[in-house]
Image 1 (cartoon, rainbow, N blue to C red):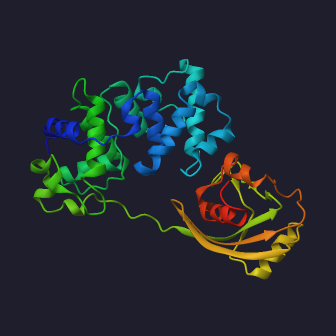
Image 2: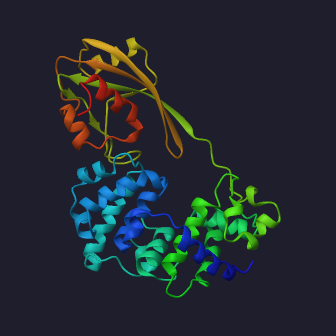
Length: 351
């Protein structure tokens, strides 16, 4: 189909139906960049309070470059995919060094920065700088596949490149940011995934070849995802007075460099749990089972059981901050959310 036909009806619809989002109020390149990194694999409603808190404390590139890593990870706590936060800071430091603290107004230069791929570079270039540069994500690929009734695999890099080239040709002069956001908005609120398009509310209803062919709900075509592997682990809340045992994860790999409660592989029985505590050089005066939990990563699931143990003495195997500091200063991954909740209850309520 001729994509140039979608520009005016889509912009008119967006002008009337755009959601009010905190990063849209003042779409500076920095704010657009931070929001887009946060929004990767994370829902809009989840991101809103994180974004507002983040830009309030870290208002510009220079502040981000200078932020202590522990504070950065604490501000990110709960968003997951912590490598995004680290790359955000690496890129900020590169911007300070190479561009005097101002993001470059060029998609090719933006793509050279850590953590910025084609999509994020397009979003910052078009929304932040008003350049005719597409931002092709899953929402935009789905909209395009349905509009053109395409059965090509939208996860294929060639499909993304070809769509970006087609969109680049039709960008409206002076309205690049609005057009990028209109495409995103249509996919997020109307042309929904999982076979549920709201065709009756779509401003491109009369143009959509997928709807005309009765195939909109069947598109886009996606290659099957590999099955997730499963890991079983037992989580320990070790309490010594008001102190809690935590340890830092390795600096590479999953949840690199974050803090966690001591864990052991497998779903342990109470006897096995007591033996594990003894192997750490500790003795437990009491041992109480905690709820089971599950956390899903992109390619992995953790299935967890847990125990709370009160120990009379600390040792050097772990770090033992006071409980209040766990909630205030330590970035604990959301994978341990259930056990953070248990810590609040068993150790005397909310901090």
